[in-house]
Length: 292
Ligand SMILES: C[S@@+](CC[C@H](N)C(=O)[O-])C[C@H]1O[C@@H](n2cnc3c(N)ncnc32)[C@H](O)[C@@H]1O
Image (cartoon, rainbow, N blue to C red; front, side, top):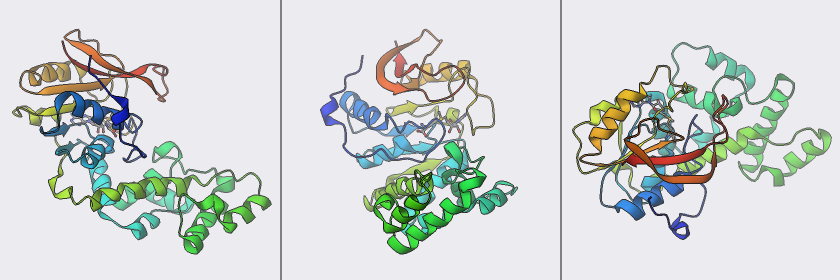
């Protein structure tokens, strides 16, 4: 089993896009496990990087990281958010009407994808965050709070919110502002001045077959699930063969709930991280696996 001295885990919120299947809940622990067991001098390949939770944590720890995902939309969104300022984040707030127009566009820009992500229910880029009944009033309120108070996370202390809240008791929270607040936190990565060391690619995982002496963190679409947002099927058996080969010349860690291939063993179990995905795998623990 791998060790983790929990006292060394970074304090503060995890970073990353609100991406389906994101490792945000355990990203701080994963990076600490990597550091404590494999050191800090090797390049880390975040090959199925998705919303960048692991890559962000590597950057915060000063580790060299290669961020890859077949889905260019995901890496483009991450790269855009870390390179833009607060005014850009504000511009991502859209009304229900604008959301529906963007959703129906054939060719979506990075900005479009980000708008759909942060203004959608469950970050699924499909339905607007609020039902039709409250959509306009909540959107207008968020716009007003930004204009008058320039705050994302502190909106519940503003008189604009408190006045509305008294009038319309059913307004419990402004999810859009919370989303923007979390995105804005990604901006701190740029201030680290480390971004020129960040390599980003959009390759199939097999493109890394020649790499040696590195750490591979692999978070592929889970066995027996269709990864939401990724339009394709993923052959887990081929992937395990590849990961097995890569383990001969690299440290290879795989994130999963279970692995059916008995060449791999569980090396760490995240006792508190539960799946929130629907479809029958809820309740299982996230684990890390390595070759036996
Ligand atoms: C479980 S998600 C990873 C989530 C990520 N660790 C995070 O924290 O956001 C799996 C990712 O694998 C990507 N993917 C699927 N097939 C791939 C392939 N053949 N090569 C590289 N990436 C692939 C998907 O686009 C998806 O983003």
